[in-house]
Image 1 (tube, rainbow, N blue to C red):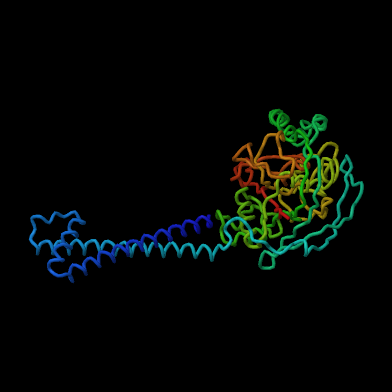
Image 2: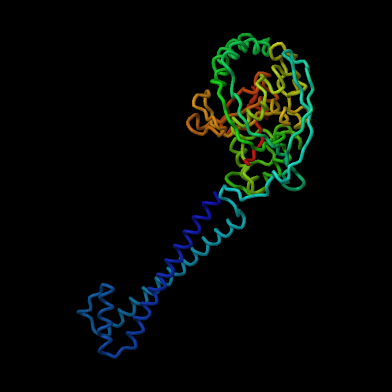
Length: 440
C-alpha cells in the first residue's frame, strides 16, 4: 500500500509543479502584454489593444479608444488573477503530495515488498542438540534419538528472538498412498472419539470418509530446495513485538489469542494477518520471511520419514498436544489438555529438530486449497493457480482436533479471513497459528 502511495504522490507532485510552471509562464506573458500596451506610443497602442481584444474574443468595432483600453486592462487583470490562483493552487497541491511521499519514504523506507539484502544467516549458524523419539504401532516408545541441528537466532526487538532452523533440500513422497488410506479404519477412529453420539458419528463419518483421505492423493514426488523454518510456532511474545511495527497492508491485533501466555503459540490468527506478520518482519530484518509452502511444511514435518507421524506409525500425548478423547488405531488413549501448551514444552522434536509440528495449533501455509494433488507443483513451490481463491491450507492438527489430524500427510482448509474454529456456543477455540520460513 505505501509503495503505491509513494508512486502516486510522486506523479501528482510532478504534474502539479509542471502545471504551476505553465500557469506562471502564461501569467508572465499577460503581464508583459499589459506593460507593452501602457508603454507603447498612441499609434502602436491602438494596434496592441485591438489584438489583445481579439485574443479575448471582444469585438472593438463599436468601442471608443478609451473603452477599448479599459476593457483590455480588465481582461488582462482578470486572466492574470486566474493564472496567479492556479499557480498557488498547484504549488500547494505539489507540496502536499511531495510531503506525503517524503513521509511514506521516511516511515516506510522499504515498502516495495522486496526486502533489502540482509546479513547472511548461514555465516552465523550455531548448533543445538535435541531429543526425538521413535514410536511403535501401539504408541510405545521404541527408541530415543539424540540429534543436532543448525540454526540462527533473529533479534526482532526488545530482547525477543526468533530461532530459525536450517533444513537441507531433498526429494520426498508427498501425500498418502491409496492402499494405505483404504487400510485405515477412519470410521472406527471417529467412533472411538464420539462413543456417546452414534447418530452424529454415522452422519459425520459418511462425509469425512468420502473426502478427507482423498485429499492426500495422489502421492507424488516433490523436490524441495533448502530453507530455514521456525524451530517453534510463532509465540504470543513474538507476535506482539512484530505487531507493534509499522503497518504494511493491514492492521493486526497485538493480542488476539484465546489462551494467554507469552510462550504459548499465538492463535486466533487469520491467514491474512499471518502474511502481514511476515511482511512486517521482512521490513524489520531486511530478509524475505513468509509462510511455508504446503510442500515445505510436509517435508519439514516428515523429516526424512514416511510413517504416519514424524515419530512413527502412531502417536501418544507425550509427544503431541491433540484432542485426547480417543486413540489412533491401537495406540494409547490421549490426554485432553483442552488448551495450547508452551512451544517446545513436550520436549521431543522431530528428526530435523522442529517442535510441535503435530498438534498444538493448526499452521497456515501459503497455498490455495485444492481438493487433491492432481496437478500439484513438484518443485516445492506454493500452489497458487486454480483451487479455491478464498481458502488456504492448514496443517498439523491442533489441541482440540483428533489424533488422525496430526498425521504428516493430513491436510485441511480454512478461509483466509478465519481466525479460529468456534465451539457449539460460538466461542472461539483459538487454534489457528503458524510458523515462518526464510528463503535462502
